[in-house]
Structures are given as structure tokens and as C-alpha cells.
Length: 182
Image (cartoon, rainbow, N blue to C red):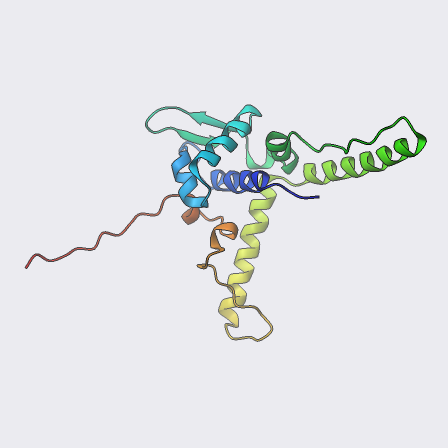
């Protein structure tokens, strides 16, 4: 089984929205900058999530997107259903006895997968990510040159995929250098 890029991006966007203050929506351009996902793709995913009641959109100059439910009320199954239409079974013909047996096997797997996805909430993903980041930071600070622990590069190219803190979910302020007129 393969999880689509759209489902992965939807989870990433929802994690960023869960870090926002409750009453401040994030625009598609802000989400695009903070996640590295194109603005058009962000808009497409947000429309799908909005149709399922996972996010709500606010129009206007200070508008944007925000969670419609609490992070603990949004499951991975909700996200997969919103962007993929749920878990679909292969087109096995049930006419023959062997076809019915194959269908039943796939149906059992699909139900198990659905139950597993229902058990994981956006809040638990966020909480697990925060605790694993704290643990990795403590390891790096405690033993920076340990040959047993891999060096963790939180500022590297993969930082966006794993850093879910507020600094990645808002457009960073650019420092303007002050030049002296001579």
C-alpha cells in the first residue's frame, strides 16, 4: 500500500494549522511558505478538507484557514477520507468462490487499516512529534559527539518535514540590514 503525496501534505498542513492560535487563520500563501508545498496544491487540499468539515475558511483581508475541530477530534481516517475518498478494495469478482474468499481477505485488511487510522488523532501525532523532538534535542545536547547516536540536523533540508513548531508554521520575519549612508 502506498500513502499518496496529497495525504502526506494534508497531514503536514493540518499539523501547521494546529500550531496556530485559535482565532488567527493562516493564508494559503503562509502555509505554502512554511511547508514548501505549492500554493495551488495547498488551496486544492484545503478545499477537500473544508468539504469534509476538517478546516474552515475565513474570507477577507485577514482571512485564511483554521481547524474546524479540535486536533483530538481529527483522525488519520478523516484525512484519508477527505483527500483520497477512503480505503478502496480491489476489483475482485465475488461470483466465484475463490473471488469471494479473496474479497473477504481484502475486506478484513481494509477494516483493520481503517480501525488503525481511526485510533490516531492529529493531537496524538502532534504530541508524539513534540516529545520525540525534545528527546532528540536532549540526546544531541547531552552527547554531541557520541558515535552511537546519529547527528541530528534540525536546520537541514529535511527540517520542514519534521519540524512542526510554530517557527515553521508562520512566515519568518526577514531581518533588514541597516546600511550607513556615507
